[in-house]
Image (cartoon, rainbow, N blue to C red):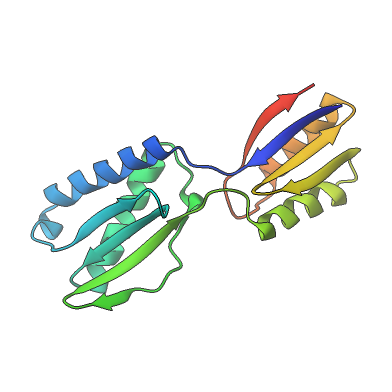
Length: 163
């Protein structure tokens, strides 16, 4: 039986390169040169901390970060900018989460899209990935094509294709 896994992951080294490039741009931009705070990557918590004197500059940091992440080849939807800004003394801080793994809601959307297409495949949620199996590889390729057209809300990769 042929199968593959649907995952959502970000290469940590590429993300670190994007953050470092954003830090360099922060130092060279005239309008942000004397800004206190900056951009910090927390690898263990899988978050990026943005901090500056006011909300407008934090928004500029978001734009710089998003631009650099996309230029490094990381899908922009892998960053979650939905957290609220937190005033912390003289600085405004915002935590940006890096999405890792297919969450439960996205997994349900994926499985529902596959079932609605009425393809002869089985899809099941396994931790932070979705395993799809079928008798024919052509059916698996149809699932991949279907999911590339469907907006799930986070970037997807298709790995471990076994026949």
